[in-house]
Image 1 (cartoon, rainbow, N blue to C red):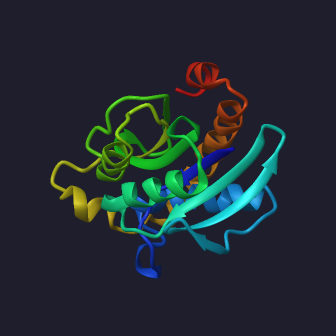
Image 2: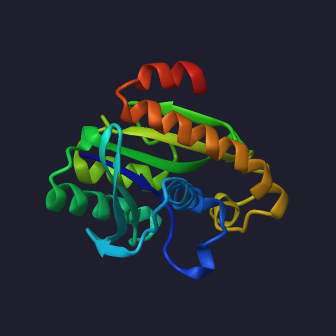
Image 3: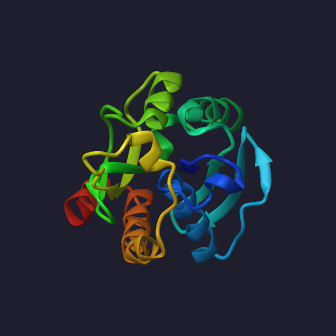
Length: 185
């Protein structure tokens, strides 16, 4: 079994913010796969899906971003999913809007949600897809920037990259993360 965890903040006031690109990704992926995320388990909203690559659990933590690791730890403990079968999708203001980067492990960089996951699971060997929301304007406060809403133009610009990230996810689920990195990074 795999788990695909999109990071974001729960609640309507955060729904369209840059920091919720991970939630947006998982919601659109659920639509693409013909399902909806309804259940509440593992400190998250979840839905299980059967794919050609096996069972996949789509996950939207209901902790706030900086505590995403608490939901990841609960998910791993209660579902039995190993950290190396977890794929995390999140925003990155160090990447230009719409660029995607795939990694199979490594540090969290400046992202506190991913940092929380690495700390709680005690491993950095977690696959991830970062989706660019930048650049961070030079005068902008990073917190204000990520918590501000995406403009309609920005949402339109993200449509194609989110689809590409879904294609990359399919490759990762098929055991082809190196090929996905070569193709999409």
